[in-house]
Image 1 (cartoon, rainbow, N blue to C red):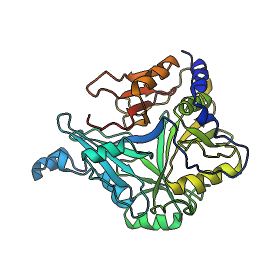
Image 2 (cartoon, rainbow, N blue to C red):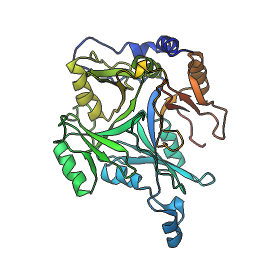
Image 3 (spheres, one colour):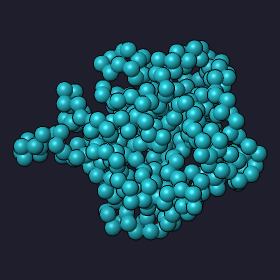
Image 4 (spheres, rainbow, N blue to C red):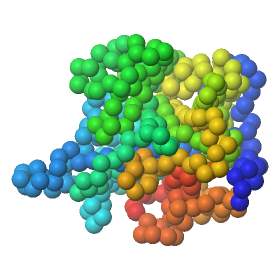
Amino acid sequence: MRLASAARLLHRACRPACRAMASAAAPGRYGSGPLPPATWQQSMLRVRDPQKRREREERGQVAAALTPRSLAFYRDVLGLSLVDKYDFPASKFSLYFLQSLPLGAVPAHEPGSDAAHAALWATPGVTLELTHNWESEEVYHAGNEPGDGFGHIALAVQDLTAAVVRLDAAGVRFKKRPEEGRMRSIAFVFDPDGYWVELVERGRDPADALPSPFFTLAQTMVRVKEPQVALAFYRSLGMTLVRETHASDFSIYFLATLPTDSVVPDPTSPEAREFVKAELYPRRVPVLELTHNHGTENQPDFAHRTGNEAGKRGFGHLGFLVPDVYAETARLQAAGVAFQKLPDQGSMKGLAFARDPDGYWIELIKRGQDGRF
């Protein structure tokens, strides 16, 4: 099916509650009602062992007992909470799920327990999933080379200057400091695997929300070829366009999963920027950032690398919780969406991987399951 035709079908499939959230240019309000049926739940990055195989053998260690450097970075330096983990000894890999919790909160369940698994697949929030292949010597590709689709994740802070001081003290390597370049309100650091981590500013904690820790998960950025087609796809998964900006050679679109009674300003208005900064980030609600470099839509043979190509693997996928994986798969197939894995294929039954219009893998997971894969 042609992309334009798929976009029209997906637009019609977008749930009424999703479409109803747009409003005229006015201050936005984060709602208190239910979330849409499909909710963004994860962004996945592959990470490496902290030590080479030879060093492990010399110390008599097994790979499963090691902590990937990036896990320690996101948990101990950036303050994300490890809310769950999976170990798959037969396949020799582990999954770690990190999330921004309210200030002072600790995970309700021991990561790796049945209770933690159940909570993970019912969470209303977004997690960062780190995939660790125990004995792999593969150097993962961090993105941001010509043709790459994945750009970065981002964390939000109230005080960018204080954040720089903290990260300098922790020995974190900077890609861009606030005073460098034209944009003085952001910075970029490298995580231990070389992925770019942007630091953006957020507003004060809202009076009606629990306070947030110093760093909060704020963005995942991927590049898209045809923005209107990509927007239709993600809107069909319950996301709302909350802000868009346009420069001479690129445009940026921000989407989020919001309660259905939220009031969203005109995405092109100044109020939209304030809505993201002062309403979403302080409430620990991340956004999906779609970046469109103008002109790529006119290149028939151009396609972004998705992070799953041999020799360029790094970013893995985005994941969404849905009420029924089989029904959601059928709906997306009817709209012309291609699939990397159908629910009953492979060893993990009941979950699926769609491919968005740019080829990024989109995992579909049943909400409310017990998580015993």
